[in-house]
Image (cartoon, rainbow, N blue to C red; front, top):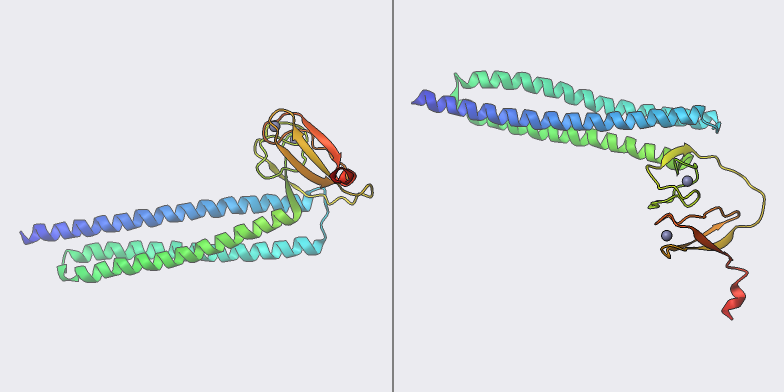
Length: 237
Ligand SMILES: [Zn+2]
Ligand SMILES: [Zn+2]
């Protein structure tokens, strides 16, 4: 009878261990994937910065390279700490399951061990997650500083939420990032123009020197552009 009870508690403990093991393992895999994806994006962006049409100053790419490495070291440090922690956890838990057979009184101690392990993992995982999130924010910064989202079809600027490209009328699939070329155009002053879709009536304004927006971003319909708002101010009176 005592033996059965004892085996049950061993089983129960073993089950609980397996659950903790599985959940930690899943989290690690998830974070590794997220880290891997971020590294891939970063590498692509950095390559594009170095080999792209814009030659950024060496100082800028050096600074990005330096920062990037700092982030990677930080993430990898937590990653290996967690992997080591995990393997020592596995070793300890094997020992604990084994000991249970001979020392049923140690159950409370062992449950405490599990709780400590869980909470220590949670803390480490949170720290690891923060380093990944910082790296992702760093990547966003690079994107926003040196890249812009464009239509895959015509490479003109994508405006958040557009379903159709305003420049070529193509349905907006997944916009792509390209290295931003900061043009310096000397020409006419920017002008505010109103665009009204002849199909769905959606309207918007822009303020640029040369307007090339001809298609409705909502339905892809042809757009009527009414000229200069400044020159039309007279109509208000
Ligand atoms: Zn386009
Ligand atoms: Zn429309």
